[in-house]
Image (cartoon, rainbow, N blue to C red; front, side, top):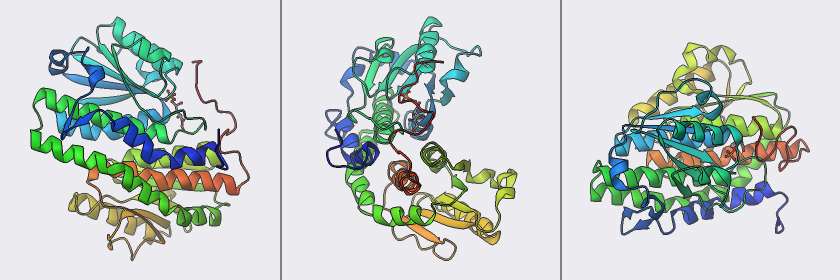
Length: 369
Ligand code: F6R
């Protein structure tokens, strides 16, 4: 039921604080992470892992890309992200020290299911991150960590995405505890940061009006580019995907560092570019590199829309628009920065008179290959 909302998507975007909070519920205790669902899996198995391969498609794969930064940092295990359909048709190297983590909102995506089956048949252990109780992928896995985003009806994934990142972060902290790579004090700091996310997403949602207005002004736009770096890179990819699927606009996301390796040739006067700006407090170096990228594209006439933390004044001289997100440690920024991009795509599609819940040619769950 839409419960008074104009679309399921708008309702689901607004439910993101709860999606994160409910996914955390019962898994954080006194600053430490315990995922009861992993008990059956065993700490010894987690201690023996040498490598993690994430298999997923679309938005779920971008959640995996975000989590790679956190899991590698916290648990010191290499993490690679594979699109499920690419993974299963080459001969991936697998053994019992490889942990395969599948991510799927529906739990029914055929390519992801087949990737999980392939991985287990070839000796790997498989954990799934899933939003749908009783679906097929969890049944075919050794363990499941459910996201508790609630049913996601709109075809475009929003609250499931933030819940997937949350579940993967909880997994990363659990793994770091079991492997002893983070101290109790460090774990407590991360736990506190994660618990602060729902209220911060709510703050971002309060500023929706500014994004909505921008989307209405830009309703005739034919192409939009998205740039990000570090954890902002997968958010740039996600922003572009949302715009393609909802508003049928050509959109591309790039790693900001790739700009001079090709994409900067696309910049011509008036080209809108969203830039996800990392916090200067998190890394002054990354921040200044992204600010230089903004200057470079601005000098070529780009129309820059920066997503930057509150108080970051360095972007002001070069950005045409600045969308603000609350202060957060760098690894938690993606959970905030994605929200204006979701709203932008949704409102631009609405301004074009399109059905945001049911975009053309797409199905909510892709059960064919
Ligand atoms: C994009 C979107 C898709 C899904 C993808 C995977 O908004 O919804 O890209 O993320 O089809 O679906 P699940 O998570 O059900 O496996």
